[in-house]
Length: 273
Image 1 (cartoon, one colour):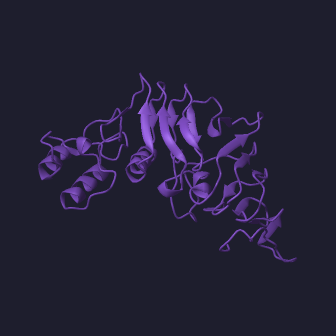
Image 2 (cartoon, rainbow, N blue to C red):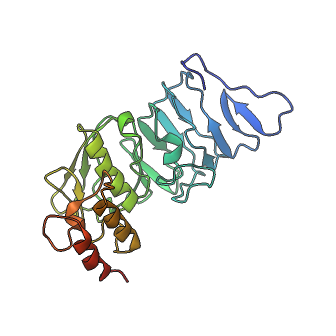
């Protein structure tokens, strides 16, 4: 929506039954979908209306000045994104924010019954699940002690558009969603200044190459928590020269010979239920 920051406001003609604009921001007519935030709007803080249940994909793309997004008590994040969203690896909040934004912090009200925000990161109300880290959050990311799970879409962005440096996983962490784990490993490999560190007692560790290693069995190549046909497909593609960037040889090397090949595929097949 425009090649520079002179685009500051949406307007909707009187009589339009599909859209409405409030304070320059574009919504569906019933205000349930937030569709677009003007890239040149100068406000640094934006409070999402409590009527909004869906933030459209890339709704905040190129929003150069916005630093803080405040979620209303009524907004609920889903790991099942709407069908009209192209990218399904994130959650319903992440897909609206995942690239080309300057958003550094998420805030919620103290009255919010679903979520809490700690240092700009969004958690479930009890603090046990990390829901979302803004892609332009600056400096080191300290996931709070007491957090036990990293949800799908908690880390979801274009690697070239993130402000993350060191990501520290707490001792209490027990589970990372497979898509989030895959993204963290991809992020580390594509963006050299981003590193992963784990606290003593954490169920996860970091390999010499900087990738995340967790309490997963050999053969669980995609970190799904089980060994299945998807792991076999990844291994077969790798053996044919189709090598995904986040491929972890240690998890695929079933016979521990330092390679991932058809011998490993044969051994992997015995573990598929």
